[in-house]
Structure formats: structure tokens, C-alpha cells
Length: 275
Length: 293
Image (cartoon, rainbow over all chains, first blue to last red; front, top):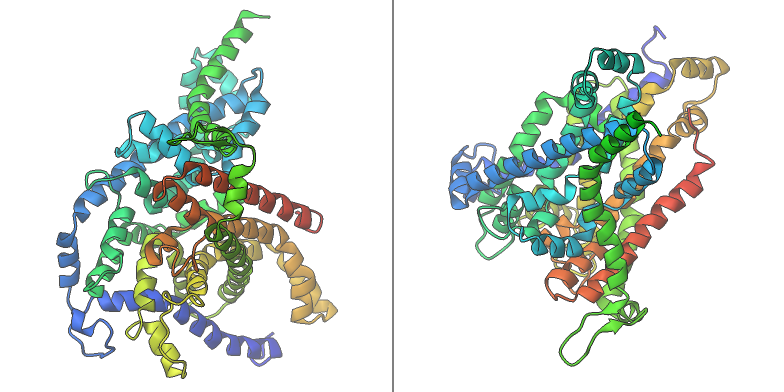
């Protein structure tokens, strides 16, 4: 393969520009949005290379709607949901992995139903339940239907089962309680599973829209996605420069985190997806 | 029965209880309750309500809005699933080859998947606006006149499909990329020794080895096709004239705009049945032909 012009290599050279065109085409919507966001409204759809750059769209958008509050709501919602999922998931996964009890396998299969039917499509009934509990239009209400995560239990159980029982037995002989063993042996040895599940769950709940839309009804609870939808819905006189700036602002934390921790995110998605 | 065994059993139930409670309360119970309530009529003024059998389903099927949403969703799935899968494979093959700038290219393909669907919707709304949007400028450039992509019954659904494909294909790419990198180089060397063509190698070796990935990606894409309607809510509200309405959007409207809970329940059951059928069918079709390592 020393000579540079084998047929395979030639095909390769032809394929590269084609792939680049494909990539450019794929990036076009995002580039177009960035263009509109960093230029004055007058230049939003005029592709003049010497158009003046500006950041005023971002500051204007930030003040045109309570985005700071929306950000806070999303952070609270995501933290509440993911921490809750990890705590409840750890407890249940440990029982399913290492304890013997009547009905264990039947219960486990019943819970796995959630892998196919997400609570988000049962939104009409869940809305009733949450209202009945008196929790409508609260931040916890947006996370509660997801607190029990079959996916989290499944992944953690799988990992817990690979931990040698000798470690568990040794801790028991030293007088460690059940929860102590869980905390000192199982949790530290499952760090990568927690990271994988948490990153996947953060990405899901940061972006979740339909359930928060129906259950939140005020500025003090609305997450970013719902706030952005209200801001971006086309009306007369909508300022596209502001909309695109707001869109980029609200996606920035996750996009930034992804660009920095690309490898961890991709590994996590692969791990959770392939199971 | 030993004491230790009983204690362990009690502990196990206590550990499982919180998570099980939440899953049952917001998945299993709502599912059963929805199924049950789809067979009953809600009491309204003048009528007592009560068991009505399949009447809600009969009403549902005679509603043109529902029929359109169902048909739309089937078409939407039939296009977005294979298109996303094929594009994802193409992206992975391209990025897997040693071409210059592959890291940037991979980022181009993957970034849309990290955006909220609502952000994607906002970006594409701007992309689609008549006259000023980039799509309209490009189509005018090639000689197709002004098209109101989201406002025309003929183009609204395809416009939604493009949005969904753009958002998800890059996500599926990473799974294909990982699978491609798992193919032992020995196989390629053996193929080269035997003098098989690249296409033959791809068809007879690479593709079969990607079978499990394709199965996973197709199931995920099919579930997305029936469970994600954020862009419909934001961009078209199902319009014009239901042209871009999907099943879950129909459920959302029946439940929260019309407050017609019986219809919403029956439509949800249809949605659940479709999801179950999708999973079952894909495993039945692919189960035998998929090559597992």
C-alpha cells in the first residue's frame, strides 16, 4: 500500500469532498442561526461578509423574557430528577441484584415496562394524578413521574451483579450494615455507570418539553424549553435575531458541556443505548 | 424459615419500594387506568356515563382528525426511520475513514442531537420562513417558486420529517461508529487477500456485523417517531388542517385543549398498541437474521 494511487485511495480522495459537503449541509441550520444571532436584525438574512458583528441580540433576548428564572427552574428540575433517580435506583438495583425475595423477578419485569412505555406519553392521566396530589405547577411535579427510572435500575443492577461477592462478604464480616455495604462497596465500584446514566438523564430532562408544558403554568416553574417555546412561537413582528439568540443561549450549557466532555458523553450514550 | 432470611426479605422490599412505587404510580397504573377509562364514558350533563365497550374507539375512528393523525404518523415513521438510519450509517462510514477534519465533521453531525427539540424547532422555523428563510432562498435559486413550507398541506409533514431526521441521525451515527470500530481488522485483511471488492465486503461482512446496531437504532427511531411531537407543538400546531398532526399531538390536543378525556384515553391506547407492535415486529423480523457476537 506504499503507492498513493491505488483505486481504493482514489475513491477515498473523491469521497472526502463529498463528506465535507454533507457535513456543511448538516451544519447549515445551526450556522444560519449563529449568523442571525451575532448580526444586527437588519442583516439577519443578508449574507454580507462585512456586516457588523454584535452581541446585543443576546443581551436583549436575555432581558426580553425571564430567561434567568427559566434557567434556574431547569437546573432545579434536572438536579431533583437525576439525584432522585440515582438514589431510588441504587436502593432498588441492590435488592434486585443481591437479595433474594418473593416476587423479585416478576416485579423486575413489571418495572421494565417503563423502558417501552415512557410516562411522557401517559401525560393525560399523569396530569390528573399530579393535580389530585395538589402538585400541579410545581417544580417537583415536572420530575416526579420520572423519579423511578427503570433504565437506571436496569443499568445499576447489571453493574452490581459484576461486583465480586467476596468484597461484600468481607465488609459484612467487618460488621458493615446492609446500607453501609451498599455505600462503601457497591456505589464506589459503579462510578462509570452512574456517570453514564446521569449524563443521559441530564440530556433528556434538560431538553424535555411536553410534560413540563402541560404541568407548569407560571414563570416561577417553567423550564427553559417551555420558556423558549413561548418566546419563539411565530407571531407578527417576531424578531428573528432575538429568537435565534435566545435559542442558542438556552442550548449553550448543554452544547458547551458536550464539546468539553465529548468523549464522556458519547461513551455514556453508547453504554446506556447498547446496555 | 431463618430469622436472617426474613430480615433480608423485609430489607429487600423496603429497598425496592420507593422506586417501584414511583414507577407503578406514573407508568403501570396510568397505563391500566387509561385502558379502563377508554371503555367508559365520562358522565356529562344529561348522561350518566358508564361502561360503553368499544364506543370510544368507534368515535375515534370516525374522527377525521384522528384518522389523519394516525396516517400521518405512519408515513412519518416510514420515512424518518429508514432515512435516519441510512444517513447515520453514511455519516459513520465517512467519519470512520481517515479523512482530514473528521473530528470537526463528527461534531457537525452530532451537535443537533444535543439541542433541545424546541431549539431545533425554533432554528428550523427561521430556516423555513417564506422569502427570507434559507430553504426558500435555496429552492428559489434552483427555480422552484416561493413555498410556504409550514403553511402548505402538501409540505408541512415532510418539513416536520426533515427536522426529526436532522435532529436524530447524528445520534445514531455514534452507535454505527462504535460498531464499525469493533469489526476486527483481520476480516478486512482476509477480504483483501481473497481479492473481494469493497462493495462485496461491505454487503457480506460489514452490514451483517452491524445487524444488532441497526436493530437498536431502528427501534429507537421508531419509538421517537411516535413519542416526540415537540416540534409539531412549536412549529405548526398540527396544521394546516391537521396536515402535520401526529398521534401524540392528537392525544395532547384531545386531553388539554378539548378536555375530551375519553377520546384521549382511547387514542393513548392505540399509541401504546403501536409501540408494542413496533417492538414486537422488529424483533420478530430481525431476531433471526441479526448476527450477534
